[in-house]
View 1 (cartoon, rainbow, N blue to C red):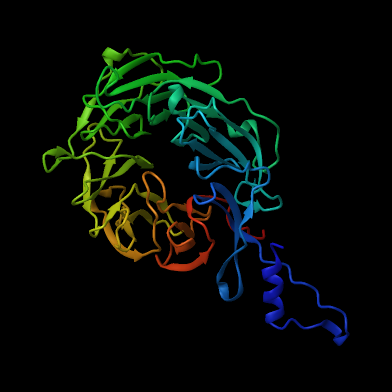
View 2 (tube, rainbow, N blue to C red):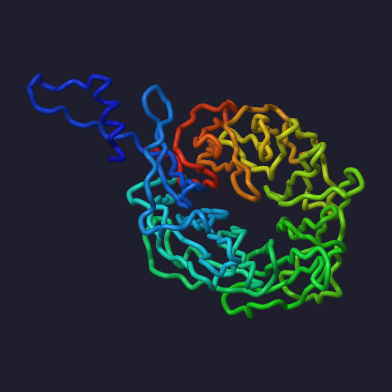
Length: 463
């Protein structure tokens, strides 16, 4: 069924029958995939998958979306899929319910079916197996997660109502050849509370935040050891000068936090040699907007840089050099139009070595404004300093369908970094961005409300 499109294409091109006899023509083998995509549908609360191929005239073609074998049918009236990450041939997705976890929440781990054989100076991608669920925890005991992270190849799921997070090792389940090896042993680590955000340093220590804007847990960060043999509970805690922490990230030996005022950071304590009283918290002032301090909600890291968006009325992309002894932000005004807002950037270094930050301008709910994608060249002269970053293009994209934390565009990349693939939830479509020309080169109708996206694999080449 998944190759039927290619059979039709071959017939349309008038494939000849060798020898002129009346035997049926041989069916052409479909082109090899260049990437496998996993797409969340907010409408049905499901995850589907499809391969992307290069077809006739070098045009990209998306196979029909298919169900992931073993993925439990969820209730879209009561449940939502949250963030989704890929690591080591596996794809993990979080599940949240509207009953504070009392109905059914947790996580699902899928084998992508895409393997990679590393031959030293080159490697090969294989797409021999269809995706399937290999493990999950879906019940009333999982703490209603909202955030799923990937640090150093491990998955970390914040169990908000349990005041902790689950650590999942992909190597416990699969190899690069995409063979299932059985059940892993997820580890629960105590730390954080409420709407937990998390940073993990060197797969050794986790910094888990409390969302509280006031009270005894205002600005609280719990520092816990992680790893085999570690005691999974906080070694100590410390407090930021303001609460409402809504983001955390680890980069270049530092940990960054997004409280209600500015950005805070501290040196990473991977040896757990400090106490809460000895942690030196630094504050980065982002200025004010009206009578309130500017803040951010989430970070993304790239190399030794930390990026985020700040400001509502006049939003900026901000970049910090985490290697600096005292990081200072460089700002770039974004071309955001009324009725839209800028979301957390995605960063990619393309196949030709150019690094871009990609920022969606999603329309706010009930707005008629047009969604857009702004492309920022992060290091135009290639000297490693992003202070000269500049906006190089603003692209029209399909519509978002923002409702609370859900319904945003999402973006993923093939392993060769030739293309970016993004969802348009309000249109039921998926688009492809060429990272060479910075143009949208294809748009596919997939139906439903496609939101979060994950990608695995790249184009294979003959030796």
